[in-house]
Length: 419
Image 1 (spheres, rainbow, N blue to C red):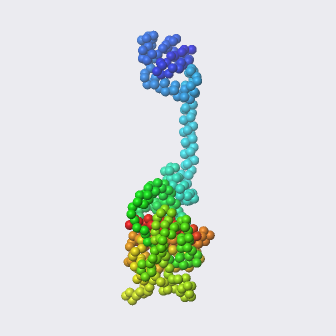
Image 2 (image 1 turned 90 degrees about the vertical axis):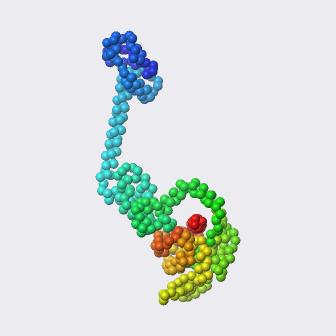
Image 3 (image 1 turned 30 degrees about the vertical axis):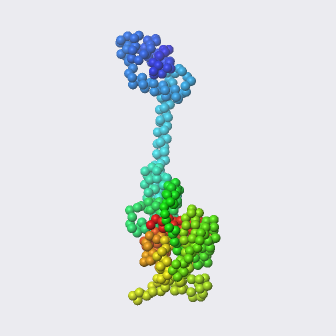
């Protein structure tokens, strides 16, 4: 056996090697950099080790010591070779595992497109967005326009909020270049709620800064058949008696022949608003047989222009609507409720006596969570909200639970401050 002292700057460890591996070396030779004074000139040229080889040897020794631990100070000649063999076997196993994964993935790649779309149709919106980052093939399938069109048509029936900015029909009517996926992610209440939660800090800061700006108390007019329906008529009473949610600050007298009287209310976030409730008629008059909501309405009157019979607001109500900062239209969206005409709604919010920046909130109301309702999108279609040229929002709510009602009022107050 021959001992070889490797220079200290390479590794302080002594190698014990077979003599046959170094036949040109003397019985004991010390490598000291490039100077080998104890070797003959002919032998120096035969065993010359360049800097690159020494550096490679140093790296291999370090890797070997890291693999085997720091305890052994002497290595046999086969140890480094075994380490290299293990590394090669590990690399081969990784390559083999990758090939097996590719082979398994290729089974899905070979499926027809309609089968892939059918499989992806069972995924939720979040999962469908996540799988788009797996590979290129999954990305192409998850971006399919038909897939998102079917998902939009199915999920929109359960949406509880639709506004002028989140109405899918608007993007299709204007022939937008957005895909169905982009429209879905832009209009989905769930996605908007997630984005709002992620930006909650920025929203809080902006609300705090907006709080210091001078602004007037918005005047809100609430009307609609839902205020007089048997199922949802308790809505106003709930708002006036829920003192933990709404605080009555004062009363507001009517300005135009008694029209416009109401309450000054304060929400939990210190936002004040004036609420004026407009009924079509008293309860005793509405209960009379043969009463008609249009002809017997205290807010409307029949007009004849150019030989055509129409409906418009009474002068006092018209003057009041010119001072209103927002409208709230309440409907009874219970399945058993009788459908009402849209004539009262469009007469009140007509742009001839209310500015186009005045927002409109439609409360699609039911009594409680046990009652069945028509989808929010059906209310949007029935009222033809896409034809309105003002900010609007349709929101599902319950008369016995004011959570969604107050959220809608916050939206109305915020929109009224933006003009």
